[in-house]
Length: 168
Image (cartoon, rainbow, N blue to C red; front, side, top):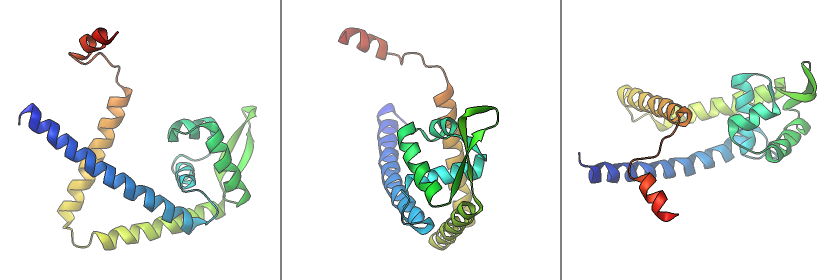
């Protein structure tokens, strides 16, 4: 495949990602509504992070989700008011808070996730098991590639350094 062909295919992939991310945003809105109509869609990610990683400091959640502390603070306040999380002083550092899921938060989150799983099961019923496994494997590979790429030190892209130098 030529460089032009590869570039065109990557552009097609970007377009499909965009459509997928728009659908994912809509899905997050629906999930948050199922948990509680008063929470923001992004709060689903906070609850899911706590479910996966256990009790966390606010700074850890913020860094993991890539959101600012003011945004996270607002979401945590709503989640605490609704009874889905607790905030307790960190025993190692009383100035910091440790955020945990409550039993109510866990139950609501798991119920919404179960509904989502059933929806995927129904939606993918026309797919073969092999197609589902292939997509799952490729998405897993993509997630690993993202992590490796994000963690790798960067050197200037060939030709890029010259273009950057010419622009100065």
